[in-house]
Image (cartoon, helix red, strand yellow):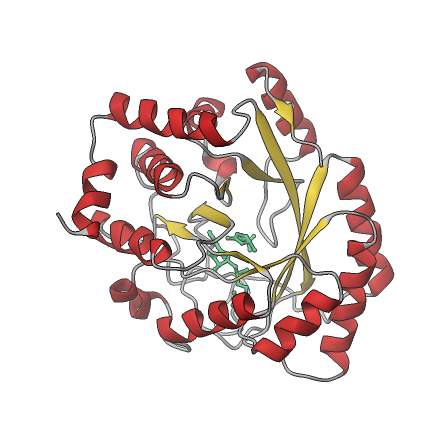
Length: 311
Ligand code: SAM
Ligand code: DTB
């Protein structure tokens, strides 16, 4: 059997077998009753030159997002302190850039990274493409991890994004790795892709060496004005199959139940945790779109008898 066929076989197992296997792997490597909270902060918003079909921040779609310049250092630090107080152990900052350019703005981002790092939080940034030298500067400033998703299969990629290639994504990920940063790399379920694309997406992640330390699995948040407006979410069990398969393929990676939780029931999220997801985004907002919020999430964990993971 080829690796692709093997992944497909895991993905397609009878649901009880799949869940049992994923939960077993999960328990071998993690405390299955704990969830990590991460907080997102959009440090530079909108007016992005890229054409990612899912994205509310692309300049070319009318999504009503108001472009904002790079956030002031102190405001970001304040957000990070609040996130820490609310139980987050990772602070993830996103900038709507196609790529990092050396200069004043990148220097400001490095200062922001330094401020968040001293709080003892894991620092993650997602700034678009970058080279090894820039990745090294991020690491020296205290950055732990770089987020750069491959989003979907290589074959489906061009129908979602035309302003950069799948290969360029991989190049940035290699630069991040070469600089000694951890890699956070995942994708989106529910953009109209076939099951085969999901399998190819997971397979592509297995080819990374070392494997990504963290894998965000997003469910598409369909935003008005984007080309993916109005797409119906995939059947919940298909989404859970992706979480479970990812857990089995990447026993030691964090699997993050990322975007899309506002449209998931508590029961669906419970299944995702059972399938091996062990991290979520906390707070009222993802980057742009709504998220359940701290009090709802604390209640959810309490109802499940689960705890917040501390550092
Ligand atoms: N400029 C950066 C880059 O090029 O990677 C940041 C990109 S974006 C904020 C990071 C990831 O968030 C995307 O790769 C995608 O997987 C996810 N994402 C963005 N918009 C989304 C949406 N509407 N629904 C679900 N996931 C989304
Ligand atoms: C990831 O995979 N998901 C996060 C993070 N990486 C940067 C972003 C989700 C964004 C969802 C839509 C929005 O609010 O912009």
